[in-house]
Length: 257
Image (spheres, rainbow, N blue to C red):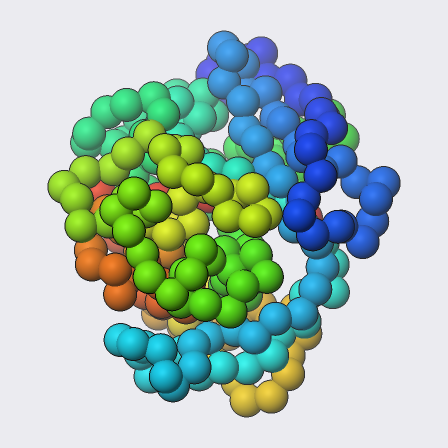
């Protein structure tokens, strides 16, 4: 546990979102210092309602993307960036990624590895009045990705390599492209991101704060990756893998209640 010595936490106010949060008392941004000048930044995502999934008219849509209305009744925080290798190193004392770079997203981490990271982070942060770190639900992830949009991507109906890291041979440092309207970077491409949910087909009708199935064999991944075509970095695209799987195309970002 020596690797955890020196953790300390602080909150900072940041600029306002393009969408106003319902609870103005909450900081618009949370910055968590992991020591050695390594910070973890999260932005406040307001509560709201959106249409999850893709319309039948969307090109290359999958049959597991049926549209339905989702209500998220509470605001939450989500990582401004994918968790980086230097952040993982600061918490876990090692870097599992094959291609190294402090600002590159951490890869080769399974869903279970992410739970170990979260457990250690929460154990230390709860003493400082924080805690509550977790993986986002799939609904939270897509809501945050869309940031109020209904188009194929959060920036329109088409994707360019100047907007997204896709159709390439490697990851790029987090924040290399412009953020979406919520101030989140790399929600499309770079690496697939683990969500908390087990995979299941979407329900019919409106749902509130969905958590996904209580059991399953595969966990959800969202966002696409650097080595895929544009159809695999759409806002609605869904992927799955077993909780023990580690790949150079898989990473994650943190949520906080």
